[in-house]
Length: 234
Ligand code: BV8
Image 1 (cartoon, rainbow, N blue to C red):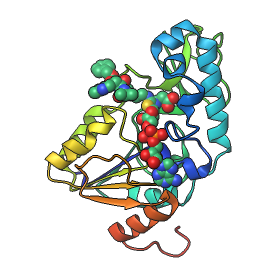
Image 2: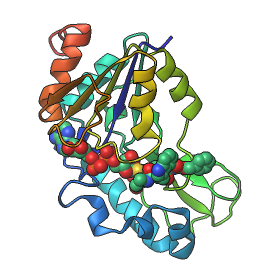
Image 3: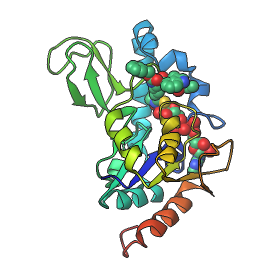
Image 4: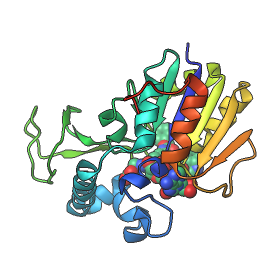
């Protein structure tokens, strides 16, 4: 049974140098959402969308996990903990986190729109690339675009019903259905905590707000929840 659910957003990877979406200079300002993160955008201009994700894959590959990723990795190894991320980078996984659900997909995975084959992506994807399984030139990033169903929602919804603690870390809570998770957790009696750089327009459904950069606030919160890390486990 899941006892603690953690939802993370772009703020978790900000101090690793990966830009967030909505903060000043955020990703969406460079690219209008409708230009890159929707199925229609991909149909209209697959080369642009591949370029956008190829660039983000390169950035994510050159970034390093930070102390917040490492603290959540330590927490994820405890029984009854589920870490869900909206982020498409693999910094939590590279920090050693177990069982992370990438509800919005992952930059290091691709999928064939023709046969559904999922495969690892380390370099660039291009429109003309043949599917490793069926050969069709129908590859796309395994990313959940606006208007598409996030991944493993049933598992997440089940966990939110039983969680006694729900923490939202580094997310502006503007994208659904993730933004609605606090309502479900709160309704199931969970203690809801928001960990964010600044206590901005946040849902009153959180019982507690911890303000500050994730690399400071998250390790301290994890220590509070499961005790301090053994030396060398930071
Ligand atoms: C769907 C992949 C339907 C792409 C992303 C109500 C219910 C359901 C859907 C909707 C709804 N209302 C509207 C919708 C539609 C839409 C939506 O929510 N639109 C919004 C804009 C209103 N939702 C969808 O389309 C979803 N799909 O509904 O499908 C369906 C149903 C049945 C069957 C089929 C289909 C899909 C949404 C997923 C879209 N894909 N990502 C990519 O990454 O390129 S979303 C993308 O944006 C991210 O994944 C993330 O989720 C979101 C960005 O949000 P954050 O992570 O929060 O980042 P942000 O920059 O906003 O905030 C950063 C925060 O960090 C800030 O608060 C900042 O203060 C803080 N911070 C900064 N630095 C630090 C820090 N904190 C701590 N330390 C720091 N150092």
